[in-house]
Length: 386
Image (cartoon, rainbow, N blue to C red; front, side, top):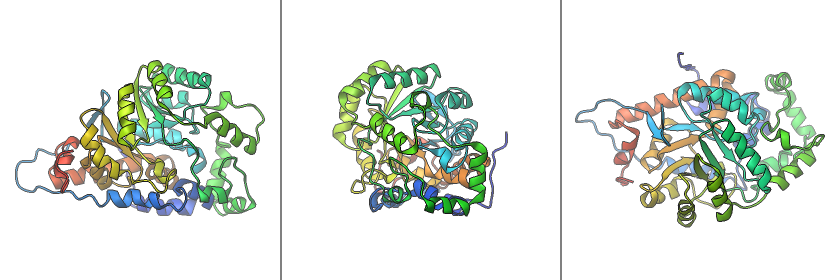
């Protein structure tokens, strides 16, 4: 099947502009917002773009190959879809749209525990190749039920989230009534009336819900009590004992997302995890923390030959992905970028965005004379081999 590409939107910035015209403001702010003053949100992309790459114009070049092996699976490019909660609130059926596009393009799709499509639905769409990100429940019984479903669906990789011991302080969400517990305000309703395409699409699709968690939610909860239930069910800090218990019970690949300190990664590797996604939750948890590229650069030197390092948060283009790979990441994951694609172009948005990012990344590789994605560290100015 031919890849879709709409030349009217040749960058994430162009997709973002159209998205801003199609979404109610409170939905756009949920997608784009960070925590506190959003300093780290901006720092993520800004510091990725401080990385410089060295082209090589003389000598033999056999062509660029984007294929990348990860956990025994060969993907068509070194990037995938990061987990995002409440995708269906941003655009109807966004989870299903992106899962289908990722499957078509040979890319990994990570399903969030709080996404708006279920484990079973996404497993069917992806042929059992999706990954699952687990918000660790307080109760072991609920954790085990979720793990059993993930295993029964045949999903190969479990991603455990480490960077949400508490919910982030997000002023935009608090003002818009989307904090926990959430509420709908007259201001939000007025914004919905100015975006009829979004509103009518949501009306046709139905109210978005936490599809994976639906069997465990008490019936008849209003929005306030749903928020309180979520706080009670998923509050708590990941610790070595919980991680070790997961490692004992989960037979597939286990990845921890959100670790950025050497001490934490050393602990995780000692427990037997298979990979680390260096992430700051898209700048939504700790405003005073580092950007994602900063710890990646140093962690790759210490752990790059001991585990699989990946990165999310801040990637917005093919050159951004190239800079992350040159800094020691094996793979990059994008969240907001793909949501801009779906919100701007609907069912064709995932296909378009993945096609665009592949083209951008290939152009960088051909400019550098970088034949394989694993060769990017050789092209980082001042960085050398990771």
